Length: 81
Image (cartoon, rainbow, N blue to C red):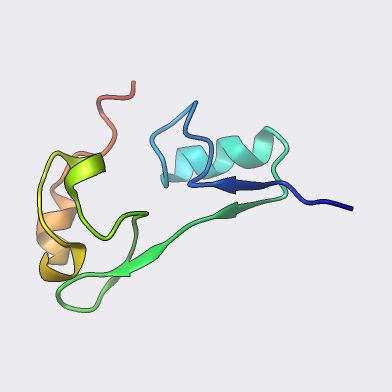
């Protein structure tokens, strides 16, 4: 039986790779979610699809050269809702 996996979660109802989007994807019938885990400058794990911050955060630069504190201050979802 085929399984349905939500790539980057349910981006139609919430910003991608957020807990809200994960929950929405599962509620919509996805059997699972696909996500990417990246390392910050200090080698802390975060969920972010891209290796660079440009597309989703309004910031610029590679994820692995950015501190967790800097990443934590970024807005990746207020534009959505």
